[in-house]
Amino acid sequence: MMIFCGNKILIRDGRYDFGNDDFSGLDVIRSSRELPEVWQKLPSWLEVKEPESLREGESLMGFRDFWYEAGDAAFSIASSAFQFAAWFRNARYCSHCGAKLVPHTNDYGRECEACGAVYYAPISPAVITAVEHDGKLLLAHNAAWVDDRYSVIAGFVEPGERVEEAVKREIMEEVNITVKNIKYFGSQTWPFPNSLMLGFTAEYESGDVRADGVEILNAGFFSPEEIQNMHIPGEASIARRLINNFLAKISYSSRK
Image (cartoon, rainbow, N blue to C red; front, side, top):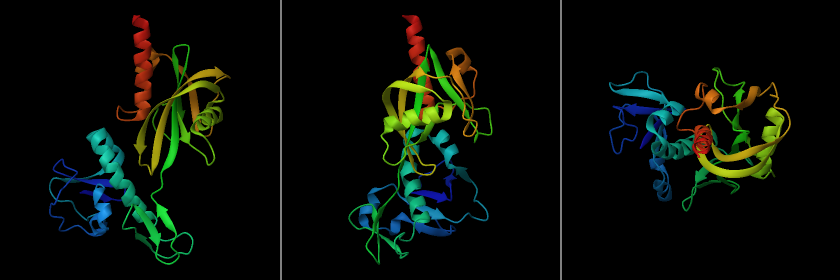
């Protein structure tokens, strides 16, 4: 059982999964324990109002910080609970007629009690791509970042678009180059708020790197030596796994 307070998770004595512990003193907004039986197969959660004071040994940790602290396995479980909790919080009424949504008893959907419209928890696919050229990797600094971090290019897939098309479009829009040899790398849940990151590698094809000046403030191809001294994403992220994959490949090639 995970306890969420908005976008934070309650940590108690270093633990985040509380089993059947006593939750007295917490002002519960909603709980997965109240859902039909089929929902009990999912990671369970409580959503609570922020307490006026925390008990000894308790803290509220931002979900991003929790990810870095707890690691991939724990984050994957918590991510499922977090996204369902957020969906129940943010989508309580039918967008067709405005009536209340009630949980299905046979799957993880919710149905309008008035018009019968059925809804499922939203997942927004996004692509993230490591582009290589002459032994260097394309990295960019996003305008939304308050620090000097650099990472690989990412963006959401648009309606009617194949993921390969999204890779090409995002890179062209953000840094003005075309790419080729797009290959699938891996995926990662990204519950900020409900994304599924699809990772790819690609090769530079043509164009001069030019940041769009709106979403991307600076971009370029960087050597492994330069990357070692840059502020890049943390180890748990698929962005970092893409970067590490590039560094490992270049290191292997240099030893051959």
